Length: 132
Length: 132
DNA sequence: TAATTATTGCGACTTAGTTGCATTTGTAAA
DNA sequence: TTTACAAATGCAACTAAGTCGCAATAATTA
Image (cartoon, chains in turn yellow, blue, purple, red):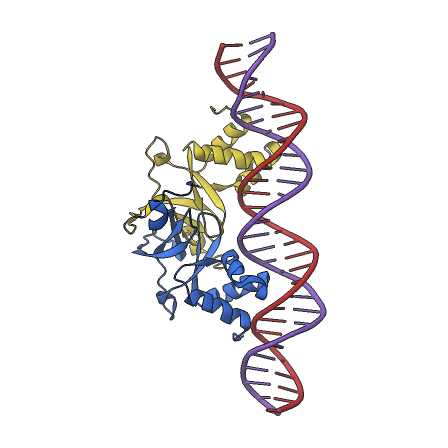
C-alpha cells in the first residue's frame, strides 16, 4: 500500500512547510477552508504520522497536534522533546529541550508525550489570556 | 465557597486512597457503579483538582487521569514528574522521574504534562497488547 | 488507455467532557 | 433543633474530537 500524491496531502504538507508550529485537525480545517473534507484531514494527518513525516503530541487540552520536525525524517526518530502550548494564542511549538526517559526495570517504552502550557513570549508581555 | 463532605466526594476519595494508580472518569464510573452520577464524577474530580487534592494528567489517549500524590498536598505543588500509561492493562501511574523544564526567555510556564506509554512490567512479560 | 486500488466525501456514530436547571442536602447560624 | 442558604446532585441535552462504512473518485502502474 503506497501513498498517493493527492491534492489534500499536498495542501496539508504545504501548510506544514509554511509554518514552524504544530497544527491540530481543527487549525488545518480553518486554514484549508472548504477545499478539504474534515474526515480527509483526519485521515491524511494519520497517514503522515504513520509514515513518520510528522510527529504527534497530545496537549493538555486533549487535542492532537502534528508537527513537521527535522528529526522526524529518516528511520530513527528522536521525539523525546518538550512541546509548548500557549494558553493565549494557542500556538503549539517544539522546544529544544530533550528528555531522557528512565523507566523502572522491565518496563517497555513505546511513546513519549510532553507538553508545557503557559504563555509564549509575545503573550506573556501582554499578560493576555487566563490560565486554564 | 467551601467544599462539602458529600457521599460522592467521600466515595471517590476512598477509591483514590485504596489504589496507587491514577483514575480516569470512566474508571471511577466503573468502580462506583450506579451510586454516583456521571456528571457528578466529572464535577467532583474537577473540584478535587482545583483544591489541589489530586493532580491531573492528560495521557496520549487524550483522556484525563487524576492521581492522589504525596506532593499534591500543601500549597507548593511539584508535579514536574513523568507518568506511565500501560497500553495493555491501561493502568496509569506516577513515575519517580522529575523533569526540570527550561523554557526560552520570556516564556511563562503554567502547567507541565508528560506521559510515557508502553508496557508495564507485568504486561511486558506477557508481551501483551498492541502498540497504539 | 484501462485496470487497480488508494483516497475522498458524506453522514452517521462514539466517547469525553460540559452545562442549565430543578431538586436535594450539608452546614452554620439562630 | 430547626431554619435558611448555598453547594452539590441528577438528569438530559449538548459540544467537540475523532472514527468508520460505503459508494464515488482519482492517482498510479502496466
